Image (cartoon, rainbow, N blue to C red; front, side, top):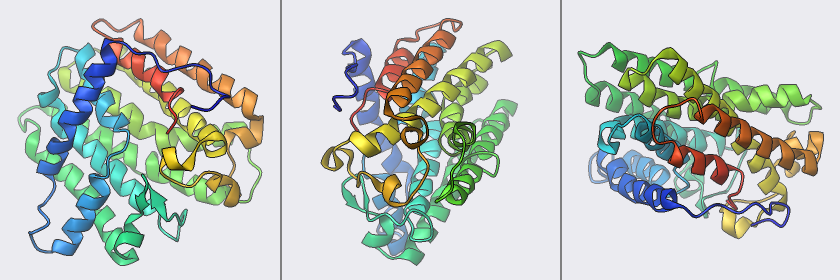
Length: 304
């Protein structure tokens, strides 16, 4: 852990529970993916390579944590968790491409376009996005109108007013001086929108009232931005062997970051303030919020 971040990740009952969800999720994800032996095998191999490369699995764990607060068993949320992770995987494939961030390393392995080729990587990303919505359409209850609301929420989170829109703002900001407000908006779309969907969709599926979903949404907004602020900090202070990708990458690309705009000390404080605000929203949610509380701490204390 960086010496600039003395706050340690708390070890609680949630630590083991979340580890269990992560372990359980890997075969779930694999079952939804096409087998490598199925034609076109090259495309399916690339999809599995990008999706089953490990990682923090923050988004599916958030889905299960929100479900716990609502009394929903993890199995009932597998389609939502998998679809959101497929969308995240596709976004990383495209983000790493030469036309975007041009990264060679992801999670300690060659990026998808390096392990395969650019064309295959693009198509693998496209196919993973399609698979996400195929899983939702096939697995969620068709007679339940809430299923459509979940699909709409996830589609919006990854579209032009969500992740894709944030990526455009990210690319257009390279080499430019932008304000903290502009940077915040960019990351609320690029990173925050899908994280927010991860905690609101279980509430939608459960039929929770609008006020409860609003608090889930605000919690997601806070930790989504905190996640990105902390990523910016790790880009400067982290260990590339631990992170699994090159550090100082944003500096090399001349991309605006929170440390470059407001400084390291204020960035650390901003991340912690966002964590505290996220936890304050949980106090309005009935049910077991222990996992969500642990994750708010984890987001600003992790070393990768």
